[in-house]
Length: 221
Image 1 (cartoon, rainbow, N blue to C red):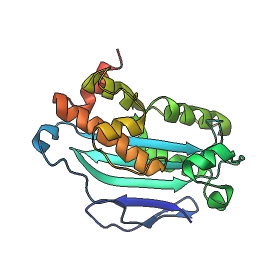
Image 2: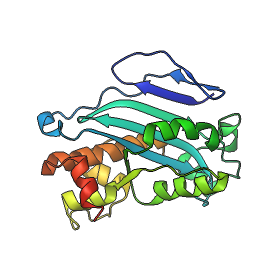
Image 3: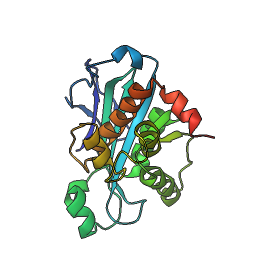
Image 4: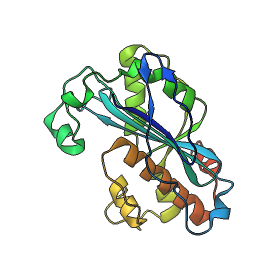
């Protein structure tokens, strides 16, 4: 099955979440800033999240990726295919490459809900644009699940604040902002997108010597 989690820099035994057994995978190496690492020590811990969907319905989540960042470093990753119990539209498949066959036998969203809640509840969760936040809201409604409290932080707003409204002629899409910051990633893989999103926020924090908490407070106004 496809249900993976990695604790970067350390090995640890795998447990069972519900009826789904997770397995360790290597993932990427630590992500460090080459310069000004000390300036990021006050960034603290946050989660970066991305989802892919089977069709235009935001609740049709078929893949979730999460990166955990602490003190300017990537310390853990989590990634899973999700069976959306819905059809796959050709245009979505052409974007992310995920098909009905890929999600056969994979967990439903309610199966991973306890894991996600344990990770994300009451924490800062970075996402790029409204899409991922809206997808979570709609999938909660789809399955009648209790929404849990999350401090959502949109990396589009962070990028605009840090790098200026006019500095990105191509707009503030994830691929364009990442290219502007020389962040390489495989677009439309949920984990890759989540990590790129987290790195954008870290670059913004480095540029302005801001913390994620400061950004979170700024955009709550």
